[in-house]
Image (tube, rainbow, N blue to C red; front, side):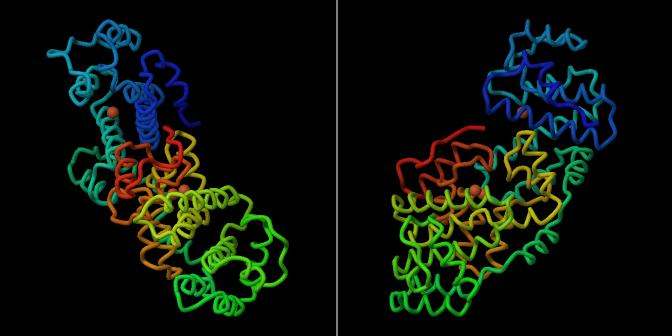
Length: 406
Ligand SMILES: [Fe+2]
Ligand SMILES: [Fe+2]
Ligand SMILES: [Fe+2]
């Protein structure tokens, strides 16, 4: 049976810091270390030592020395030496090394494992300050030699789905219909209008049917039911008609019940992206709706692979979805979404926006920042630096959504 991380947390709860962000870091480092140790066949008492060290690796800055000594006694460890000089609050590096050194129950190899898990998690937390792609930043971390062999091999074992398998899954998704793409082009063409759009969609009877259905679904406002494509389109302008058509075209990708929630999230994000675009000069308003609608399309490919269960496991352990995807596949749904849109021959500006909707700090795409600002879920680790980068790129006062931590 899998080692119970929750019980370890309870065991040392009295010594854990109250700050939610720091606690979340400690829990993640603990889970990463424990899962790595399990893969390498450590016994329960070794894993206890690993779990506690992971949970307490910031403790020297959290406790006075009396508390630290009590903890050491409690864990059956030698007393914690007075650190000389005492570590300044915030000087975690010095404190970490000293603390790990006194966990005598921990072999050198296991201490290196915990330290590696800590470094890895801190690197993910620091991503908003990095100029390069997530992949390159992690490559640099591994090239630095700071990550122990055993943790690196555990990370490899966590990866259960390859990029090639995700690309295969993309090919299995319903294709975004040509007629819908043509409707999007017409919406941006001042020379063409509703009539041309109607002609384009009529060439694809399935899409025409789906568009009428979508018009009658109430999602785009309650009006009288319409029976024909021309009525469905004529009721709205060309831009709104293209929204209607693209929503109708995309809905087939989200057909299963399990994807219903994701479809709803896509719609909400789409509406929020339109609100952000109305405030941000740099964002093309006619792109905002579609960008929001397709922003998480990369998650569809994941759902077609066995990775889904593993991703949910890490999410249940407190890892945001992009982090979980990184562990399971070495990439995430933003990158896979960009690949999906490229496969569907979407315009580059939409591909770029989706690729960076969780890394708005490393792109010039204001649309990426707009999607990021419009998200109402925590799909990546919360970061004020990243929020500021997005607000700055958009030249708006603040996000329309409520910021939440966790
Ligand atoms: Fe740490
Ligand atoms: Fe999202
Ligand atoms: Fe996302």
